Image (cartoon, rainbow, N blue to C red; front, side, top):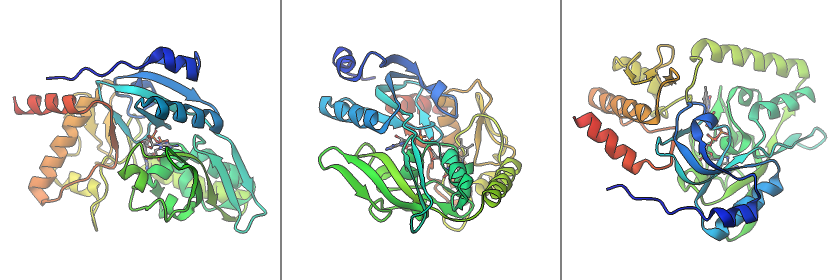
Amino acid sequence: MIDHPTPLPIHELRAQLGEHLQENVPMSSYTTARVGGHAAALLAVGSGDELEHAVQVLWNLEVPFFILGSGANLLVSDRGFHGVVILNRAHQIKVDAAGDPPSVWAESGAVLGTIARRAGLRGLGGLEWAATVPGTLGGALYGNAGAFGGDMQQALIMAEILHPIDGRLSWTADRMEYDYRTSVLKRHPGQAVILAARLRLQPSTPEAVKTAIAELSAKRRSTQPPGASLGSMFKNPQDDYAGRLIEAAGLKGMRVGGVQVSEVHANFFVNDESACASDYWQLIQLVRRTVQEKFGVQLELEIEPIGDWDSEMQLVEKRISE
Ligand SMILES: Cc1cc2nc3c(=O)[nH]c(=O)nc-3n(C[C@H](O)[C@H](O)[C@H](O)COP(=O)(O)OP(=O)(O)OC[C@H]3O[C@@H](n4cnc5c(N)ncnc54)[C@H](O)[C@@H]3O)c2cc1C
């Protein structure tokens, strides 16, 4: 039996959030995998104050919501999300070159690559790795994004957090309880929202930063496929690589509907522009099961499923068993 979601209090939401609240918005337009059903409502916020106001209103009205950055780590169900998506476009950036250490403060909707390049223009490095990771500062802090030996755990000095009971808080990296591609926020979704953060930088030169970013970007282009995807689908297991296991299981090129295990990098699942979210889900199950059977390794998702997946998973399981 499929549950019918409670309708949103749209009039109340419009009264408190404004007329630019959009209804019935396709999430495929807002995710890098370009799949996903409709969000019941979407609100774009352009500043930290707007973000804070929207979150407070939704907490008060007890309406389900999530913060959307660039949608680079999200697999939204074909059945969509029955709540409000807050599209975070709060993107102020301030570089403090004179501080000890030098640092950059940014709102959580700022794009990570823009933050790294802005610091570089002032002759400050340390975030070159981050310039190559798609997404916003908020998404990166939430999932402890990392690449080429760097990650948010090392970069974070202080995050400005909004908590439903305690209000505004300052959290250090310790308080974020970081681990490989996860944080306390990712382990307990919906508990708090990241408003802004200050990241550590180090002295460099504009030329050195520019060159390092160009080299890392070229390396990425030569090892990862172009096209619509979510980046790495699974976390690397201890002392191994998810991509190596998937390839060794003979799954490179495996396709379900419009989604395929990349021939370039087996941990990337690429949408040929005709895929739906359940194609992704079926391929995830197939890969997980095969790797488990062949190597006894349980692959853990790095990406995050969002929305109504319970009924979707039942349908997928039914289809697989038929
Ligand atoms: C081609 C490609 C390559 C990639 N390579 C890498 C890589 O090298 N390393 C890596 O770590 N990742 C990589 N990824 C994954 C992705 O880039 C990261 O996970 C990124 O940090 C996601 O940021 P986002 O803004 O898109 O977050 P979203 O996908 O929009 O959101 C992710 C989660 O963060 C939450 N969130 C976002 N903002 C906030 C906020 N302000 N407060 C609270 N919660 C928030 C969301 O609600 C959601 O639960 C790659 C993805 C792609 C498509």
